[in-house]
Length: 154
Image (cartoon, rainbow, N blue to C red; front, side, top):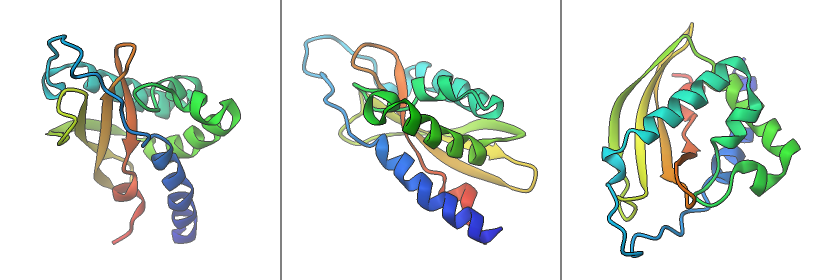
C-alpha cells in the first residue's frame, strides 16, 4: 500500500505543479478590491471541489482547478486534466471535511488565500492546504492542493 501512495504522490506533484503558474493579478487597476481572506468565494470553491471529488465528477473538478487565467483543461488538455483530477479525487475522497484555518498569501493578499481544510477519511484525518486564487474573469479557482498530509505515513 505504501508503494501505491508513493506512486500517487509522485503523479500528483505534477497535478499540484500544473496549477502553480502564478497570477498576473491586476491589483493596480484602480478598483477597490476586498482582501481574499475576507471573501466567502474561496470556501465555496473548496466545498464544490470536495463534493466533486467524492462524486468523481471530473468535469466539475477541472473547471475549479487551474490558475487565475486558465483552467487545468486549458493548460493541459481535456484528457490529461481528467486523468490528473481522477488521481486527485482518489486521494481527496473523504467522509467529512471542515475549514479549520485561513492564511494570507504574502504578495498576493488581494488575489489569493490559503484555506486549511481538515479532511476525515475512514482510516485517517489530515489538514490539507488549498491555495485559492481570484480568477481574472471573476470568481475563484483552486491553484494548488498540498496532498502530502494525506499521502505520507507516519
